[in-house]
Image (cartoon, rainbow over all chains, first blue to last red; front, side, top):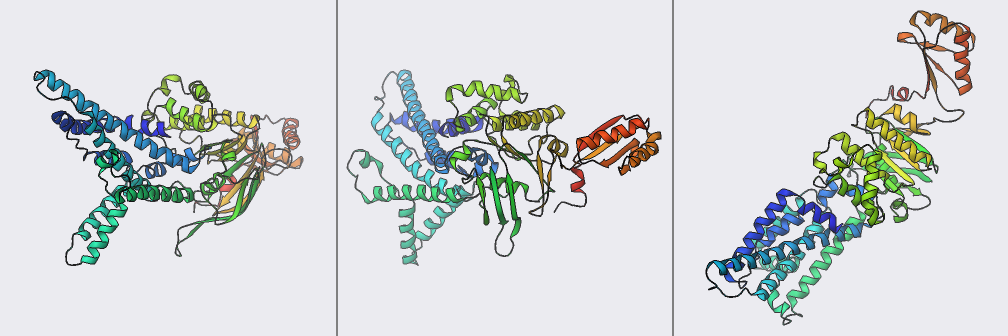
Length: 235
Length: 302
């Protein structure tokens, strides 16, 4: 299943070109700053490209029926999709860092070595954080994709994020804003990964919420998918 | 052996439910080839999905060799070809077959050779296998779908319109592969609207209409439902009908010198031909048929 995901995503010429462009967008700031300014915000778009419709597209296309007629547990199928997504994301991020290094070194050669050395540690910390934050987004999309059709998982995620952000910013209803912000913190916890990777915030509430959220989304996805029926033509 | 007991399945909720299966019971014996026939919307595919464990019956039960249909032990010996083929369009034919070979639990080292062999069995050459599936014609997709279902020679085969959209060569190839599987003892459930093909490969058919089995016919052995279609020179039809009547047959005459009569056995078929020969009526064509088309008459699509 992991290999299938990689083939699906990297074998598609259009998607491969899009991923390459996003790699360049991530590699550019890394090259200019010599690895010091890892800006992986665009990685969210990469996650959307890779994980939107991660299960539902297989269901609506009918591929899942052929796969599940084989001796494969439904949870193994889901796990394969998720690990395949994480592997692809890791490859994209690793490629972006390597591309940043190559561009940086090319710049050093072109400008007579005036730029500093490429700093791998901050670049890797940034990429690691983007991967782990992507793991959470991927888990949410996986969960939504087990019961929503097509790319509705992505639309639902965007709609929920926007709704919580709007509700959280209404000063006239402080209780509602507080509830929305609490929901956002718990449903989509954001972690500062730098201190975590340095071992300084391993017991932080943010990290706890993150681990809990990923676990709950994956368990819910497995629970829903293992009970789901597949009648093609019904989607 | 597949045992279906009083299975009911509805789609939709809140008073808008459509009953797709209504108290369906049937058995498919080991090594038997069962044909599911019936008009569109009769519930054939729903039944197939229940047999495969994709759908859970609202009531009743489905057991395959005493196990749930989605038990991994059942899946390990199952080959399935859906009517609507769900392919990863960017995969090559070879990658698709190899993926299913591995999913079926086949030796990964043999994936390439087994995939090539499976493709050859359905008339796809190695050059075609190197192409992406998005470039395949409908007939080629059907063929590769059949190839994936037959990977690893499964004991249970569920085929949903396997020859749909294929050319006459493809239809013949699919038939040959089904007959091969049958010869090695596979239990096969075939859903198809291609009635001549159903008649050629199936031992028994069940006719589904509005979610119910309305008729069951054996197509092999004594007592099997069949009709004889005899063709004689058009100017001798009256002589032929008289000769058959004298031999105790009631024949309906049709266009082009055809005569249609019920025959209970191969021996009765031979008697009918002998009666025509004795009356000196040349027999231009003689074939036995279950006349499945007759089952469809008066049963419009629901």
